[in-house]
Amino acid sequence: MIETVQVVETERPPAPVQTQSFRLTRPSIVGPDIPVHPYPIKLSGPVQRGFGRGSKDLGCPTANLPDDALPAMSNVVKPGVYYGFAKISPVEGQESELPVGDSGVLPMVMSLGWNPFYKNERMTAEIHIMHEFQSDFYGHNMKALVLGYIRPELDYTSREALIDDIETDKRVSLNSLQRPDYQTFASDPFFTD
Image (cartoon, helix red, strand yellow):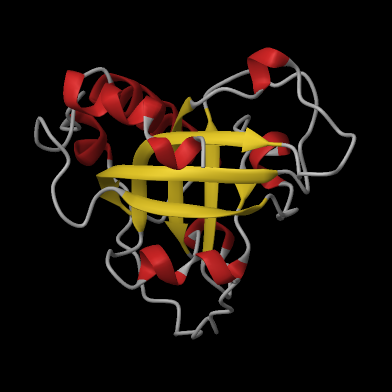
């Protein structure tokens, strides 16, 4: 049975502006050595088309979750950047297949929020899977396990500053996921159910 969840739109809150001093004090690993409540957070749904900015403007293509997937996360955490694992799978019964390397469980970094630099009017969940996909996968199923928090949602004075933080977010995600208690989630039954 599929449960439909109504997304409650809230006002876009103000976000602090990223500063050079913030960038210089960012840690290379975040979170405790083992995920703690409310993690892991399970998200799933078909990959939606977004604004198209990830690839074009930022060099960071994202897979967007549908709005009805948001409450599973937005009800328990604040807007910000998170890390975990994700997997793309073809829709059952469709002939569309993914190349073998594109269908595994892969590290990801995720933005949950309003993207204040772009002045979004609604909250979105955008996942960047750290893998070079051979083709797009719009409409395919995505499952994600969110395992930890990286940083708050920030506004930026330039696109370059935003890109710098995205690149740091990717490194922090990869470093944080290398810990043994996080690596076990790459083989979590959630990805094979």
